[in-house]
Image (cartoon, rainbow, N blue to C red):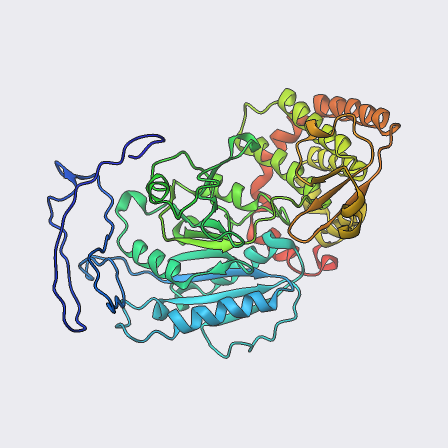
Length: 492
């Protein structure tokens, strides 16, 4: 293991080759190399030196032998949810078609393309079902029920294929991630050779910053009662030592759905995701089903990192869903910690002068305290429209930034804003933001809302937690989702 500040010890294994023409060279790694007893302790990598002028290296790769008769028969269903992002989607699907689905170089048993299909749920119902002219690519139309609804719609279709598809695993992926087909290929072969003790683990792909492609945003995460610990955040993977650190063991308990591979043996029609609309559905699903997480350098996607964007609706979904998850999985998260979390949410909104978000914090708590019945009796599409209407809409603040002396990123620490007057919060990626005046009377409103919510939590939190634990399976059943995915009138 490579820890912070430790010296990397190298064991050099050298081979020299004098090549005068294009030819393949196979460099075997001795069985005793990098081993202490019978346990592998090394990381293997290439260093090429003494290269003469006009030399060309066409390709370098690692290979291993394995017994096909002893390997697993893997059938991979790729599950993508999309909403009004056709260009991103077409780019990714065309790449997967070219590099995987149309790869005929291998026999059918070993070929990734022969053993995978794509299920794409279009929440906007705009994409033609025959857009890609490939019977292994399925376009599903559905209501806009957020990522949770779209991914679950795809998962239900995958489960419904039964023996016709014969799928063993489902791979959740975002539509707007920069997908590298090589990651899917590595995932496929890793699944074929997994040892039995890892069969019920999720494979979690890392997320790298699309705007700064060597910087890692997250390599798995730890929930920690919503005080999330994001593993490997900020690592510069152009530095060799950081690549080694990225392979070190770390506590992880959830995998985000920008790239998450799940064994279908763990999933049945009553083990579907919770209807969170957005945010937290992937966290809850990992906490519920995963026996562990597998991460690996080279299994990753690039994705835009919106670290300076705080959408008002997210303030509602993040808090409401976090309270539900803690009710289900964190018995030590009692009313005191709930009140503290609410106080932080209200305080952050007040200090950032985002007074509309105060009402969203209030609504998040009151809706959570209603228990599972709230999800059963609420039209998620209409609710989302209501939530969006309650919050702020971003505007172009480019001109205002030139004259305003108090401008901050949207995720500025509230401490820096204490005692400040009017200011601008903005996202430096596109200069979209909010011009926010200070309203002193809001302080008293915040105090009143905090007192009200504290009393409600004291009176109702324990009952809400029991309801979620006793009845959450109603929200994950195929019976519920069949109704949720149809028109709301049919649900009632």
